[in-house]
Image 1 (cartoon, rainbow, N blue to C red):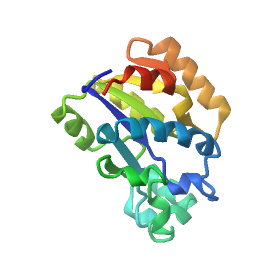
Image 2 (cartoon, one colour):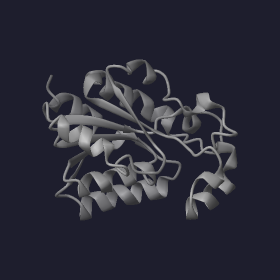
Image 3 (cartoon, rainbow, N blue to C red):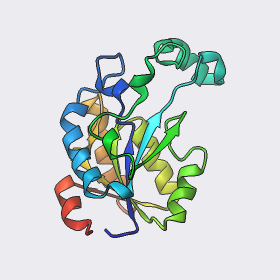
Image 4 (cartoon, rainbow, N blue to C red):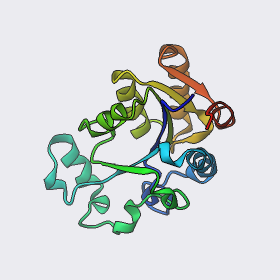
Length: 193
């Protein structure tokens, strides 16, 4: 890993860390790992934030139904501070960069892929929440965009052990040419300054 490597940290936000219906309990144990990676190369770190619509009526199709169910997370109802990246990660911006997104994948609108290409990034270290939702979408889109993906298994969290573990098996067995599973310690050792 070198200057063509970037760290993509997915949705480490207060609404997933604090006592909400979307709380991801594993985040407490994963946060120190993610922080260590981000602090190692903050200028090469990108944080994403999932930003819900103002109201369910502002989105179409299944997303409208989804936010009718979860209306307390729409911008009209949520405490705006819950959309923030958790501390101590938030303190790393800048030099770290933030990309907001309105869907699961940060690659959806093309901005992130273009930003990474401008910086000649070829490898993405992906951390964050949740392994089986937004991280999954980010990983699959990163693969489709041709990026090599490195996943520190101790830097990912989910609210579901079963689907987290299933995805780790899928990455190892079905995507081994495009996804490398490793640990944060290995990343810190290999990602030279």
